[in-house]
Image 1 (spheres, one colour):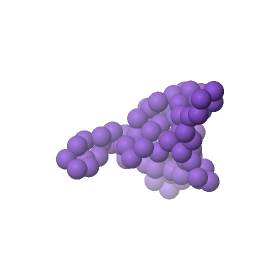
Image 2 (image 1 turned 30 degrees about the vertical axis):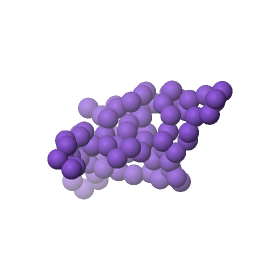
Image 3 (image 1 turned 135 degrees about the horizontal axis):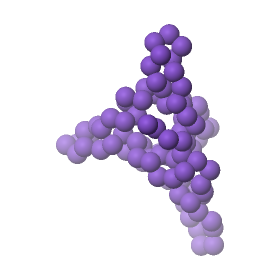
Image 4 (image 1 turned 120 degrees about the horizontal axis):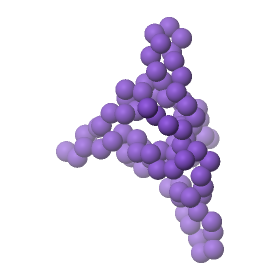
Length: 89
């Protein structure tokens, strides 16, 4: 089960999972998610791919790792450095 919230891709970018939908023709479950960087594009990916592990340079990683509940601003985005006195988020 993929729960809504923030996830970090194994390459470092963060995404917000909005929910899980079904493909209209195949009924395959798809994760609906938004990039938390750049223009914040909306994407879908099969649940089977979301949950898989990938091997890069001989090291195995989870493709996406859950890091925070939906709406939580406690995780710093890689493209938003923290300065003294700034809130995380």
